[in-house]
Image 1 (cartoon, rainbow over the protein chains, first blue to last red):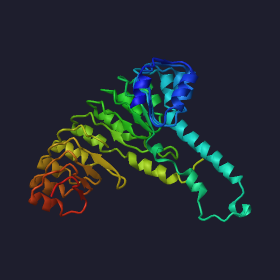
Image 2 (tube, one colour):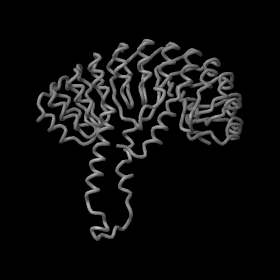
Image 3 (cartoon, rainbow over the protein chains, first blue to last red):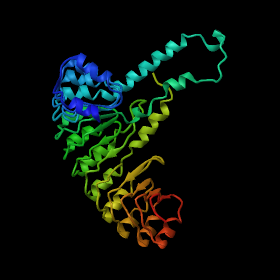
Image 4 (cartoon, rainbow over the protein chains, first blue to last red):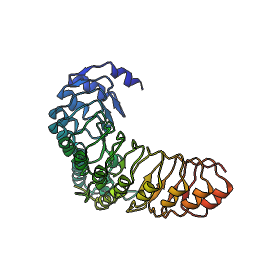
Length: 264
Length: 104
């Protein structure tokens, strides 16, 4: 796409104004190929982009930058990031929760505003058809079900970082991991939503059991889809197969979708 | 559950995966990387109750077809492009099989 090439020449994105020009000039997915550094102000502007955001060259995240980017409300790809400390992982893991929370806040605000408008009868209007405002407003868009945070640049995952990322809600992609310790897998097993670990070449039965645990009881009324992808495994042992076969993620997803007839 | 990287499936692993315990009709196990499946492994899949996607298989021998029709869940064989009349007859004896790519 033309805008990919255009933005690939940018090395650092330091000013909110420059970020604003990019965001306001782009509809749909925004890919900033060459951007290796961004200021907090620029990040705040990028986070408001109303579609997919990819920053494949951004090498370093710090807690403050992560906190700002986590407020982005669509799929967020930070595949250039090679390592995370626990604080930064904790901040970026808020991405899914923040998105859903803000979506609901917006809808609630909108509903309250609509309730302040006189009803058609009061205003003397004759509506041609009935519209169920409440259901229309609270129906969550389908992209929220697979809301994605991708950190596929990570080659290693310590248990403490895994613990923080395990708090993420939504689709978490960690395709850069070639191996995972049993401890880290145990922490990721607490994740709710889809988990993509397509770089893993092998898995111990203990790690498989932890990942197949799939979050257990769904803790709230979130709508995320729940799948486990391990497409990098070329072969598995019967023990690993048995543990993976225990995966019951979709049950939790359905429970969530049933309870989410109304939110807020 | 996606295990599309698996290139082979031993009977032991097939038996282990056949215990996948679905919670609804949309739950599926994807094994789309398998290019071939032995009749022994196929037989071990019989207790499988979810949707089983074997999109990597290009053809299905009558022996494998005989085993696969015993799978209790839904079968997706949308990579199959060639099928003998015998295999087709066996597979089509059950309703829940998807052969959408097969040229008849």
